[in-house]
Image (tube, rainbow, N blue to C red; front, side, top):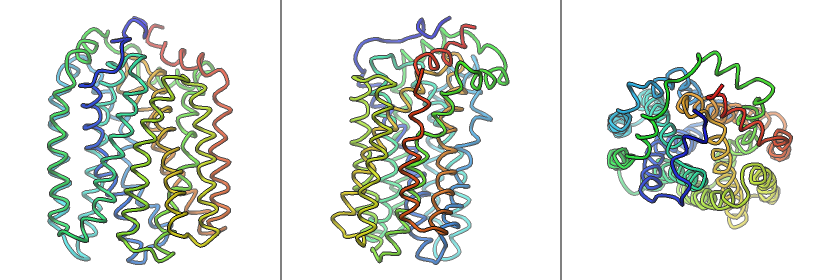
Length: 415
């Protein structure tokens, strides 16, 4: 059965499916926001170095390793029970996040790190099931908007778990704050039951996964399709290398915790949500190759205001504008990247194949973080931002012949 034969809809986006995707992706963004937005600020104030902060990325290892168990969601006996699995994962994730409030003071560090690792495992597993539903249920006319819900939803979750924690923890007790985050995640579980009908019908109509996992991996690196994986790995590398520097840079400049929360996290992430919507709009009109080309250029250009802001002493207004520019471009680029990767995914192996592709992007988050932190420590922030601009433009080379590469990647299901 070809990928084209499995298309669910060529109509406009269905509001119920898009809303379900948005709330489910938001749920997995909460613990990620806590790990990458809240903890770096708290630990930097405790005297941790840039390299030590970059090591926090290791706690997100399940996002890179989830391919080891992603194939479970492709099993014919598991597909019909996907919504139940999602609900169970949501509740466990909510309980894990709420448990942060049980620990306080200096003794809280180790339990927090352990809970961060567990939350990453649960959120990444939830992501496998949600991605599989999205790949199978979104038709070509829905894909860009569906990915806008994907990126926008998880960015909203990051606001709640990152900037929301930074701001609210100054007003409310930390226990109450994380309790509210856990409650929101539990409420988002109802989104699992909105993913019905179309997604499940496609899952049941699919043939059993063809070929072994090793054959899938070989297909991803063969001549006809290798650029898909290369693009997934490199497209956001420059933005990740620059992004790891922002919060420590603001702490070192004397910004207060609340200011970082409002400007660097909430305002920036809000711009990323707007960017994800813009990316969905642009993808519908430009398609994969032209949209990705524009996004690569936008990412590079968006870092230039950060260079200027840092060089002028990080004035509040200019820095806020620079962060809005950076996050707006990043959100749009992420939406267009994930929409393109969905097109290149085998429907019969949607959970595993799409997980492998997005795991390469997650790997770029860790690699970019260590690259940016290492360069920042040894050569300074200004040269590191300049290198990041160049890294944003590098993936343009992989877009030559993109359509044929994407079709070969997704067409393996019919081989």
